[in-house]
Image (cartoon, rainbow, N blue to C red):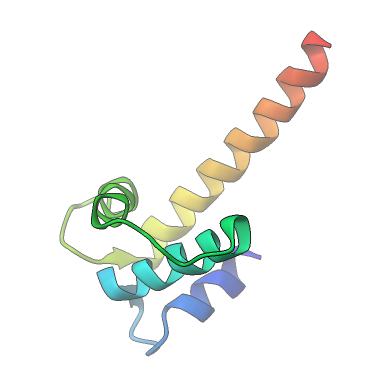
Length: 86
């Protein structure tokens, strides 16, 4: 799943996700969740800071996969904890 995301948003296949490609990813997510594509510049900035581990202005493949795996593990942990407390 993460690989497909990477391939979709690394649109030109150069091995990095640029700010513009990240913005497209966020717009697509927003559209799926809220029915519109409006993403604030601050939201793109925040996502870039979170995903761009070395802060070089681009998101490398390793950075992307590390971030997404961390988010997936976080989501699994939250579901597990909510079941445990129920």
